[in-house]
Image (cartoon, helix red, strand yellow):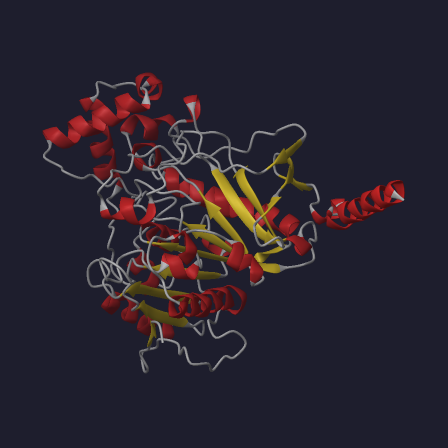
Length: 458
């Protein structure tokens, strides 16, 4: 009797194991540039995330301050269960507002070897190259000096739940990403030095175009979007001949529209500044520049700032005549900007006065193209202190990551997040935040009928 009971328990346990074990084809081995890869399930159990996929060779040693090179192949099946290192950047300081708001969990691993991206996709589309899901590629902000593609606000789970594959990327920052120098320009006669971080973004976009079908994505339906310096990056990607033809839609968050809130210097100014920085550290040859440690480079940058009374130096993309040939405003006015649908906006308490340039962009584009422009303002002043709709505050909502925040968010906040998720993913799918309802409540911003959608709790 006891034996039969024990055998029965064993049978039940075996059946349970068989029913909970996932079939092998639920996590297929995908073949992408570099080799084979498998992802890991997220907490939602029907979304797979691929962390730390290399999209270019490590930009180290002789590849420091060179355009991104092809991925180095790996052997076997890479299980993508670990984030790739962030680009080297200053560590966050306790007491700083953004540290307390976003980086209270500490800093990530940092390395010059930082060219990695992450993919969230519905489990059922993996390996199905005919699934043709829309794709969204996110470029993080951080003043071109900080940030990474898996910050606490950023997650692709809710995107994939809505049928959009999300890709987030790391790229080179600061002196590694945007140093220009006469010796670096002389090294390659077909290339003007600098803009390495922007070249990284282009390389990531090209990787998505070539590889995303393996995850069930449509390489001809890629939306790019970003916030702050990430949005300034989007402006560059939609005007560059290296990238604009790969983009089907774009969202520009908190960097205005017409006008340049982060102006890029001309090549000669960028080169002169880069040379002065390297001279401050005594680096007068490429060999010395590439052999210097990151600490030494940081000290050279600090010495340059002290000697020139520059409290904060934002190293940015510059107009190099090749990758970036003109300003965004010039490209809009001469109609060389990508002719696609756009969505752009800012927050209620954002930096500077962004709204006039946003409205103006819609007015100008409506006279040039049938592709719409949708404008928004995020008006929700977050609960807690400070009670503001600060620069970057919308990120909690359009990634639906409110649970990661220390803020006392309410049920109404979660409803707003669902609403914004629908708007953002609808735009990725249809080029219209209203979805299939072309004449929905969010009207295009045009010359004859300026319109800004105000996003707030009900």
